[in-house]
Amino acid sequence: MAQEGTFPSEANIFVPDGSLSATDCKGLADVLASVGDKWTIMVVGALSKGSLRYNEVQRRVSGISQRMLTLTLKRLETDGIVTRTLFPSVPPRVDYELTELGQTLRGALVPLHLWASSNKEAIARNRLEAARKLHAG
Image 1: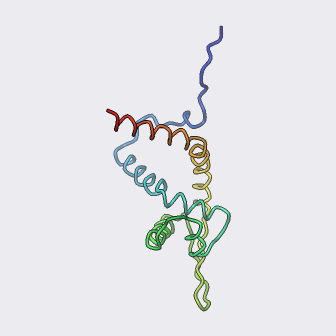
Image 2: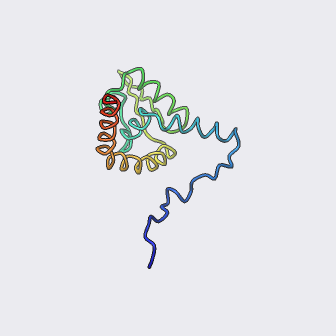
Image 3: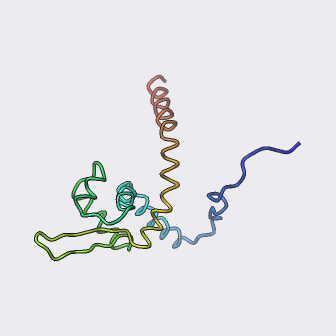
């Protein structure tokens, strides 16, 4: 009788084997902290279909403050994920767009988005159950 089970997916075939140096781990953690930030993910999502003006990005990223959007866009520009184009007009017009590197990040975030969409209700139920247990016991 054949054994049933889960087949390795592409996601777990390429799991690092733990042989990273401390320097590599720190560098990787730094990049993951930056690109895995809630606002980064939402800004990259907002820019996924093309360039937008600052106010358009802010409208599409619900709940972000002007300060946080400015900091996020500056960091993404520094990291080479977003380009900022200033048009000499009155008033000045500034557009933001994903770079080629930013497009690869967008591609990496799509599976995470799909996973979150598929599992948000289960996670909400689990959190509710954990809160009930905490208050009950």
